[in-house]
Amino acid sequence: MATRVPGALTRTAAPAVAAVEALTRGFGERTVLDRLDLEITRGEFIALLGRSGSGKSTLLRALAGLDDEAEGGLSVTGSVAVAFQEPRLVPWKRVHANVTLGLAVPDAKEKADAALAEVGLTERAGAWPLTLSGGEAQRASLARALVRDPDLLLLDEPFSALDALTRITIHQLVLDLWSVHRPAVLLVTHDVDEALLLADRVLVLDQGRIAHESAVPAPRPRHRDHPDLTSLRRTLLAALGVSPEGTT
Ligand SMILES: Nc1ncnc2c1ncn2[C@@H]1O[C@H](COP(=O)(O)OP(=O)(O)OP(=O)(O)O)[C@@H](O)[C@H]1O
Image (cartoon, rainbow, N blue to C red; front, top):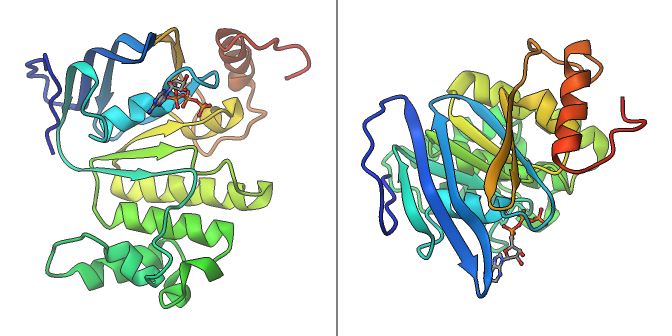
């Protein structure tokens, strides 16, 4: 997919799966994204942090091609899939049919079978969405994203409504899926530890721009107590305007 918005840039750099240049979006008097620049490299895992209302979802919606009123340059190479905080399954279609929804390829059924197997939901393929647990519904949502074999996977706080144990399991699932399929991932989260656990690169959105950017130095698999993450955690909390006292 190539998404263009007014004033779109011309860009030649090959490894970028998405390039955003001077992206601006306001609602009424309020400018939420203010000439924001961002490049997403093929296969990288990015976490996007920011205070509530800083514009994270607005940026994600623009990247997903769901906002045609943003201004500036935006180009996305390849296919994009999105998973939201609420799994957004269609309640009157069974899980398998939700995964294939809108998928216009001849082998849609087989692809959905494979995606459901990957997320551990084969046995729930015939279930109605309302009978799924929160974790199962989020797995179904991930299967629906995966089946599209996206070059860019946008995750808008997909773990935040899950209980702590389920969240740990789904974190591992997302890392496993990412290591096999290698889409670029942009994960919106409020949780600094989640960002440090999952991402290669952490961005902080503030005042409509990427105000801070850090590479995550720790090797995988990671543990939140890894010493290399301690100072980065403090830096990110400071960038978010949160006192780091007592957080290490
Ligand atoms: N469709 C809309 N109409 C009017 N204002 C909007 C619209 N969408 C977003 N906004 C406003 O834009 C600002 C940024 O919203 P956005 O949802 O992008 O923030 P966020 O960083 O994702 O917040 P949160 O972390 O609380 O989910 C907020 O002030 C919000 O009220």
